Amino acid sequence: MNQVILVGRLCAEPEMTNDQEKKRSVITIAVNRSFKNVDGVYETDFIRCILWNNVAMNTFSYCHTGDVVGIKGRLQTRSYEDETKNRKFIMEVIAEKVTFLSSVKNSENSLKE
Image (cartoon, rainbow, N blue to C red; front, side, top):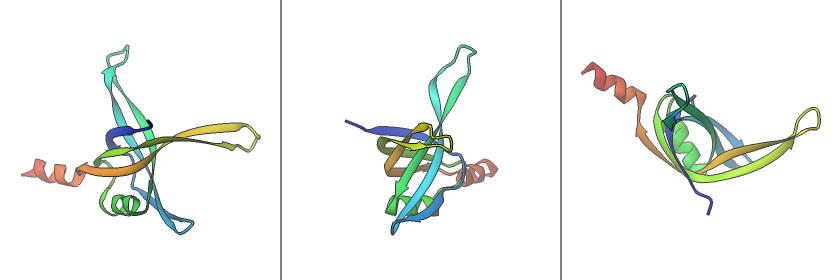
């Protein structure tokens, strides 16, 4: 079974492109690890996620930098050749569902009240 569940903050505004008549969005989320390293610091992983069609459009429309999202999806590996003909491998999450958990905008408003 290939299933991934992540909760993290959007690192940048979602990007939207049309790829062969399909909507595609690429996001990167910052996911904190649940344990401290040797120095007593929680490290963060930055994970690239690919979203398609309605999931891509909704995320592009409603999510912004700093928002917390939950992602359910699957891991996918792909490869390419760089300019020196070396084969490079990339692992990405293909998001099947994105849940909007909290917004930076809403958090700022609640702090002002």
